[in-house]
Length: 123
Image 1 (cartoon, one colour):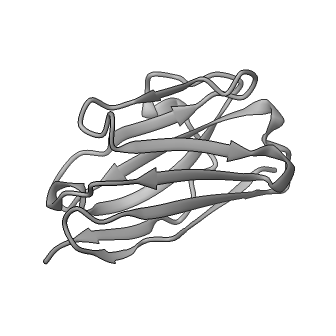
Image 2 (cartoon, one colour; image 1 turned 120 degrees about the horizontal axis):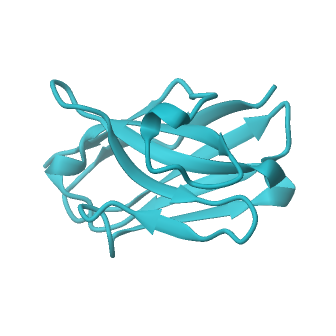
């Protein structure tokens, strides 16, 4: 069964960058779209980005478009979220999760959730 583990979070100043990693094990990424989500305290979970399984097409929330980039390395079983020009409102726990084949619009369709990694943007 596919297992996902996030890493790369931390404390960064506004305008800084971080790269989050989502490591897959137990199954190949070939069949799965991987979504990135985040949840800040007291707020609902937000779908940040997704990369599909076959053609690696991507999508982004309007709040991160132009600042975040999702990529994957199938050979390594890794998906990355490059986050640039970070803002305090990007502070949240970031999760990766999987959906078979395509990027579903709905977070509830995703499974195999990782444990999350904390990103804090503060001066």
